[in-house]
Length: 338
Image (cartoon, rainbow, N blue to C red):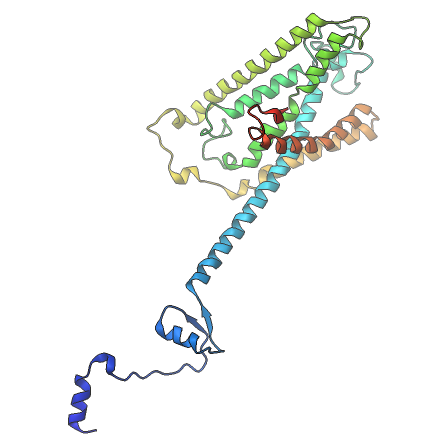
C-alpha cells in the first residue's frame, strides 16, 4: 500500500474502518443485550448457550417463591405442633383443677392418688348431681377463671404490643407465632369450657340427675351470673396485669420518644427457633409417661381417661381453630367460636 492510500485510510470515519475479530473456538455463554450476541443467536449456533436477563430474574423469583413456601410450610407445621401440645396441657390443667376444688369431694368419684389428701379438704365447687349443695359454683369454674386470665394476659390492650408481656420486645420468643397461637387457642381453648358449664346448669334446673336435691333453678341462674362475671373479671385482671408488666419490661410502649429501630424489631436468634417446641414436647412426653404409669402400673382408671382425652384433644383444638377462620365470613356474629 502506498503512502497516499495509507493517508486516505487514516482519514476515513471510524465506523468504516475494518475490525478484526478473533473467533473463540469454544464459546460457552453469551448474554443477550449486545448486537454480537443477537447475531450469534440468529445464526443458530448449536454450541452457544443463550441466556436472557428475564430468565435470570425469573430464576431469582422462583428461588424466592420456594423459600417463602418452605418458610410457610415450616410455620404451619410448627403451629400444628404447638396447638397439639398446648391442648394436652390445657386438658390436663382443667382436669386437675376440677379435682382440686371439688371433684374429689364426692366419695363415689374420688381418685385416690397423690392429690387426694389435699383435694378432699377443698370442697368449693360441685357438679350439681351430688347431695352436696353449692352447684352454682360449677366444677369447671376455677378452670374458666384461669383460662380467662391467661387470655387477657396474652391479649393486652393493643395488637402492636409484644405477645409475651414478661419478656423484652426483642426476645426471640416474641417472633414465635406458633407459640402465641398455641397459648391463646390451644391452651386457653382446652382449659376453658362453655358446653360443660351450660350442661351442668341445665341438669341442675332439670333436677332428674339428683332426686335428693330436686330442681335447682335459682342455683343454676346464679351459676350463669357467677360464671359470666368471673370470666369477665378474670379477663380484665389479666389485661391489667399485662399492661403493668409491659410498663416494667417494655417502657417504650408508653413513651413515644422511645422508638424501636427496624433492627431491634426484627432480631431473631436461631437457637430458640427449635428450642421452645422441643422443651414443650419433652413436657408432654413426661405427662403421657406419668398418665400411662398411673393407668397400667397403679391401675387407676382416672389416668386412663386422662391420657385418652389428651390423645383426642389436638383433633378438637385444630378443628376449632379451622372453624374460627369462618367467623365474620358467614355471619356478623362469630357462631363458629362455640
